Amino acid sequence: MSLVEYTLDENVAIVTFNDGENRFNPSFLNAFLSVLDDIEIKTEASALVVKSAHEKIFSNGIDLEWLYPYVQKKDLDTCKAFFYRLNDVFKRVLMYPMPTIVAMNGHSFAGGAILSCAFDFRFMRTQRGFFCFPEVDLGIPFLPGMTALLNKAIPFYKVVEMQLTGVRLPAEECEKHHIIEKAYPIEELITEAIAFAKAQNKRRVVVSELKKTLYKDVLRAIEVEDPPIIETGRFNV
Image (cartoon, rainbow, N blue to C red; front, side, top):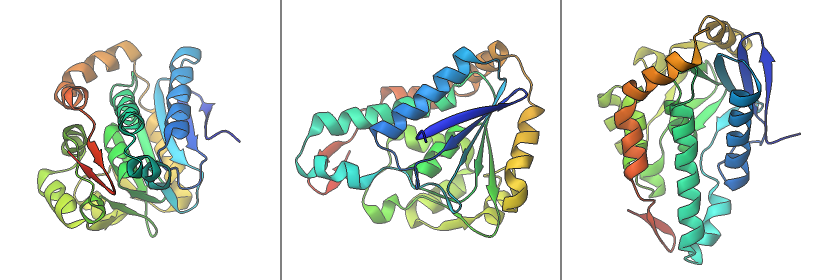
């Protein structure tokens, strides 16, 4: 089974993350980018839905078990290359030439939650799964582009609370504060997300041009930043 794969349902490309907790490492990020390229080039899809195959987790973000050995060795080239690649993924999703929908069918933590903010629309399951930025407790500061993605998707008062406290929000709370479009029971989540996507049958060229204006400030924040300087055991901007 591929780390990331897709199927088509009428005009909707449905991407599935298949790598367990779907943590970000070079193999996973490259697989996701490759699938996004294939959908754009090889299909006529006009909307994108992304979900996870894991029954409890959408994505737990950066693969720290993969990254920390390079941090400890002070391998700055590898660390910086990884963060540049992560930025590539954020930018690709943000500017993808069709409406993008994430169906968070479980926990969306740290980088996984940041990635969800790059999508145009967010749906989330009820009853199980939290939306959370635990970086304040992990000792990992946000880069400017990451904060710009949060500000795009989340009301500022909640961005402040979530960044500085690391609070975990269930789907119902996310819906209340307009972080997500809608919360659904797991048995309805994917069906409803796909139904929403099917209604977004727009021309790619128009969507692409609209995003250039809508997200220009977010894109600029991601593009101009430099990855963090890595010191032993911690990240330091």
